[in-house]
Length: 298
Image (cartoon, rainbow, N blue to C red; front, side, top):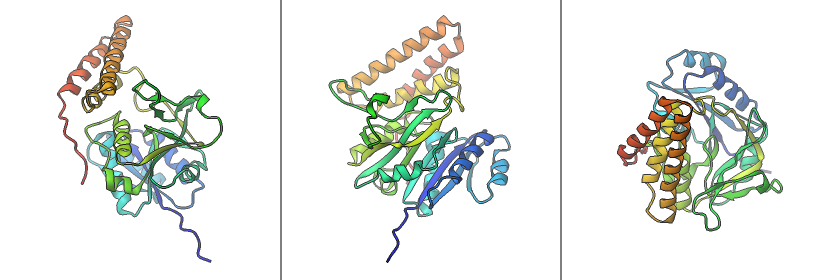
C-alpha cells in the first residue's frame, strides 16, 4: 500500500541582532513533532555576531544572510523565495520571539482544505498566558475587523477569519503563485493585514486553528511605547489607510488612524515624552508622502 505524502513545510525565522532569541525559536522548531519540517533563518543585516552564532549552533539549518536590514516584509520574502525554490508545499512564517507547541504545525495543517490559503494558531502572550491574537473578523454593521476573543472559542473547531496575524502564519504555496509576496512597502507592521486582504480577494479562505498553540514575547524586538515602534506603527497604518477605497470601511480606517494618533499624542504629552510625540508626527508625514507603488518580488 502506497504511503501518504507528507507535505513539505519550511519555516522561516527572521533575525536582526537577536541571536539568542532566534536560537531559542529555531531549537523549538527543530523539536517539533512534524516529520517533514525544515527551517531557514534569514539574517536581516545584523551588525553583531548573529550569523556566526546561529550557524555554529545549528550547522544543519540553512541561513540567508542579507547585507542590510530590509525590514519584515522584504526579509521574509527573501526566505520565501528560497523556500519555494526548495519545493515547499507550505511556508511557515515564525517571529523569532515566538515558540510553538510540539504539535502546533500538525494541528495547523489539519485545519487545511480546498481554497484555504492561510492558517494561524492561537497565540498567547508568553508572560501572562492570556490570549494575545487569534486573527480578526468583520461582522455586523461595524466596518472594521474585531479581534477574536476567548469567548469565540467554544471548542477546538477551526474558525474562518478575515485577517490573520503574521507572527506565526502558515501559507499554502500556490498563494504566492496567485497573489504575490508580502508587500515591501510595509517595512514593519500592517503587511499581514495587507496580505490577508489580497489573499481573500483572490478567493482563498483564512483559518485559525485553536488547537494549535503558540506563545509570543510581546515587545522583544521593540518596546511597546518606544518612539521607534510608535513611528513605524503610525507610518504604516497611514500607508494602509491610503491603500483603502473611500467607502464606509475606508473612512472608518482613517477615523481609527486619527483617533489612535491623537490618543498617542495626548499620552506622550502627559508623560513628557516629546520623542514619542514627535514620532507620531513623523510617522503621519512619512506615511502620507511614501510612494504607494507595490514592490513585490517577481
